[in-house]
Image (tube, rainbow, N blue to C red; front, side):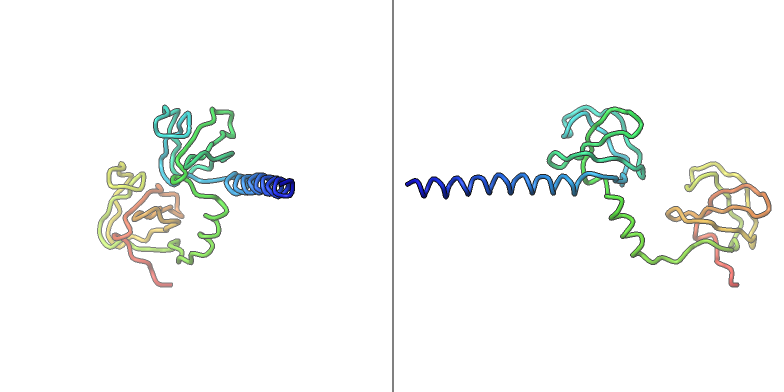
Length: 173
């Protein structure tokens, strides 16, 4: 009987130690720097039934300090109120860097020419205000892509803006 009690006691101690070890390992894997993948509501508690404190915009870095169920506990680096976001709206920054490094995409930067007369827009979208009109066959300098829009910056001091990819053709060197 006493042998059985000792054996049971050892099992209970082992299970408690294993639980503590795995819980701390899980906590270490969750905490750290993340980036939001969409505009996401920051809630006062872990669940959609809690009030929204504010909305975190897509693409900002957040500091995750814990997890409750499917909800990340987020702390502000600027002294704002802590809150909770659904984990599906955040990606760990070291994972995002590895994925970006493993994705080989050709650079869009370089010289292009307009295929037709087009509107240079203030932002990436057809609803953004027009900055200027560019005639057909105008040489432009593309610095980056944002979805289906290309950021154009002048080497001669002209206004920067955005044009749709479909309206440009890369110039051969």
